[in-house]
Image 1 (cartoon, helix red, strand yellow):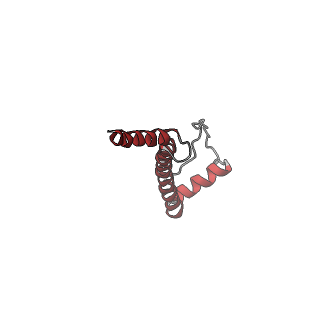
Image 2: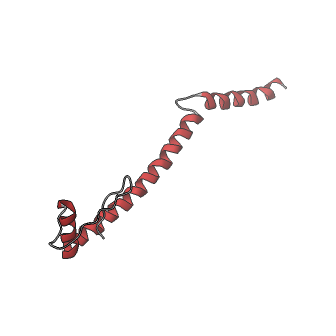
Image 3: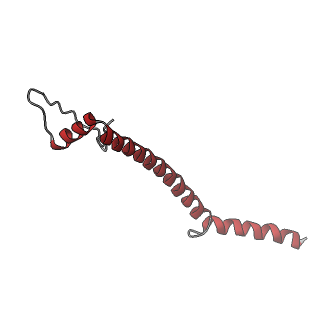
Length: 98
């Protein structure tokens, strides 16, 4: 009878140890899982940014209007007779050329 109680006791101790161990237990696994989810989200964000930059690059190579607009925005230039209207950009936003 004592041997039958020994196995569940050992399993229970192993589970408690896994829950309490900061470096290799369940907490570490949960922490790594959250980092993995955050990293996957960041990868998706970077992929979207890369695609937007590819589109911008293509527009700058093939569309003279996009090239002129980019230069005028970077140098803050206007043609004679034009009126420049500046709108505040949302925080963290970067200019994108369609």
